[in-house]
Length: 584
Image 1 (cartoon, rainbow, N blue to C red):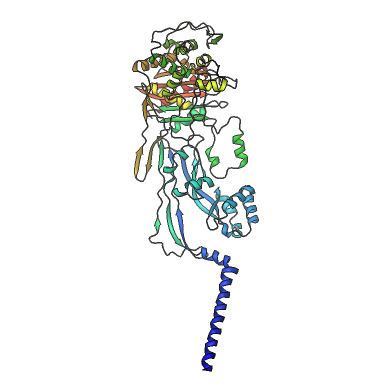
Image 2 (image 1 turned 120 degrees about the vertical axis):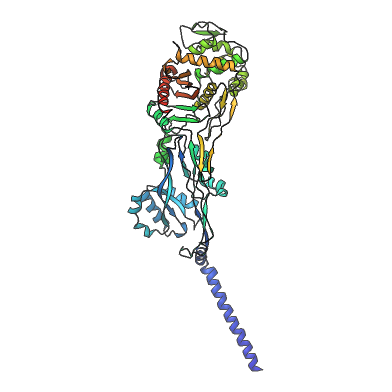
């Protein structure tokens, strides 16, 4: 009996001792050394490795490159392997000209992504990588990876640029396959067509040990190849684009647009001064950024769709067609006699030609760009009707071009004048100014170009676009643009076509500096005042025909003087060059 009790108590003591030992070990593992073993365990698991696709490239209408991918070395960091944060930041700042504050912000933003590789520095040169390769042994958290990066072949605004995804963008887009390291389109075509340029991510399932080595358990069936992004083939012509950039006056700001009137394709898209989108690929220094945004000429402004200006006399065809369509005038109607201006109430509204044009028909008023004819015509039109008709011609409204941030422009109404100048403000004076494209009316160069393309088409307005087609592994997809009719009859369209022809091709027409014998050029000059009180903005817009109307154009220069003497000669050079390359 005693022997049995001794065995029983001995067993209890042994089991208790074992339990205490196990409890002690568990306490040590989970409490004292828990953090260390958690890190080790987290490093020894199945990881899903994202395999990135190649971003689609961008080419002109003849398959000449505009934006391509090139090989690059990018520097990544794994925060869970950082040993000495201050030393690491000093090393990066010394070797990559990065500001310590910016590095510190990046590390802080990603402080919870301990085992994810975070993109730190883009586009490291091969020479720099070799130069610091030996020092990298002291920084196991850093690693170089060969990847691709964007390269833009010439300065422009329409492409936009790509950049590293921001924290806010990642929160919005992470469900669409974007990681914190993703490179995305920020502006221009790169942003507008981001979904098809990006492609589809692939993946590879990998089990790794604590040192990060693959155990290759799933190598046979748990992978998916990425699908590269679609290539964009634009309607743009590189040769024409670069020629226009080369002849644009170096000291002037402005814009030039060339459109194919048959399908709305934009063949040249020039905003001057331009900027180099490659500056934004990789790390943009604060000094470079400040230089760009503080530049008085504002090279970051896309004047084609983001700049809005009074159109001056290039707007007169709109008022002429309104008068004709509303039966306020006919082709034979002659309005007030131009003696250098027109007295309306207690104010004398001047014509640009001080000696006066006399009494003119609508065709001659367009040819000589007589302001008095349109002053007088405006007295027969209400402001609301003028605004409605302008908008129905797709002016002062967005064209819907395939770019980001297009501006509407502006056309005032009575409520706007009263809210800004008081309920007793006169409307007749402002309306007279608006009739010649002056005052508060604002349009973009692209809106004007699309309008003149519609006049070339006999009143068929086509939405302008840069994309011609996309090409990917599944084939080719052509871009189809939307078309709408202008509110003009065939008789009005024919009259406007003749008026724009004589304005360029007959003696004393304001656009004679653009006339060319080899083909038919129609157009209208404009010189619009601006609130800064400097020289007028110079406009010239129109279209050119060979067997049929082929291209429409707008040439615009800020504060450059008269459209007939500044913009029209520049348009002539462009048209002659286009004539040389159109059949090659």
